[in-house]
Length: 218
Image (cartoon, rainbow, N blue to C red; front, side):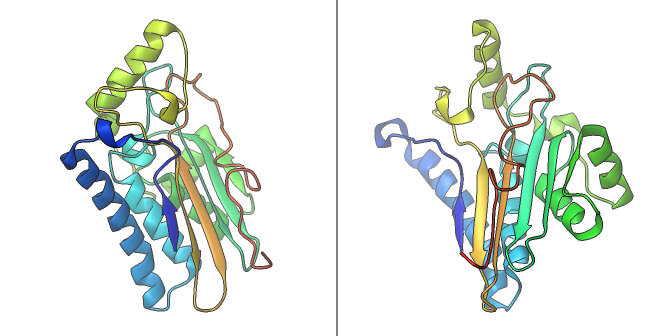
C-alpha cells in the first residue's frame, strides 16, 4: 500500500512540531484506512478507495474538503480510480459539493457505461446513486481562502505546491496505490486542482493513463 499527500515539499525549518504531527497523522490515518482492509482480505480497489477518501476528508490536503478555490470562489474537484485486474476505470471532473469525489469515480466505474462524467452530468449521476454532498461551508478553510486571495491579487493561478502560504500549508493532489493478496493492483487520485483556476478547467488527475493508471501486467 502506497499513498501520497501531494507534490509539495515542506522544509524542516518551516514546519512546527504541531504541523508535522498533523500531516503525519493524516497520512497515517489514510494508510491505515487502506491497509487494514488489505489485511482483512479486501480488494486493492477497496483499499485505494478507503485511503483516498480519508485524505479527501482531511482539510490539510488539496482534495475533497481541503480543495483550493477556483477563480469564482468555489471548489471544483477531479478524481479517478482504476482496477488493474479488469482495466476498468471511473473518473469525475469539475464536480462541486461532492464530499468524496473518488467515491463518485468508483460508482461511475461500477455502475456506468462511461469512464468519465463532468460537471452537471456527474452531479446528476451522484444524486441518482446517493453520493453524499456537502454545503459550500464544509469546503471552506481560512488558509485556502488566503491562498486564493493571493492569486487573485496577482492575477495568476498556481498549482497547490507552488504557492507559498503563511504556515506553509501547501500539499497538492492526493493518491493511493495498492496490491492485494490476490495479486491485483488498483490506483486512485483526487485533487482540488489549481488555485484560482478558470472554473471548468480539468487537469490530468481524472485522465486515465495520465493522472491514474493500474494494470496487473506491470
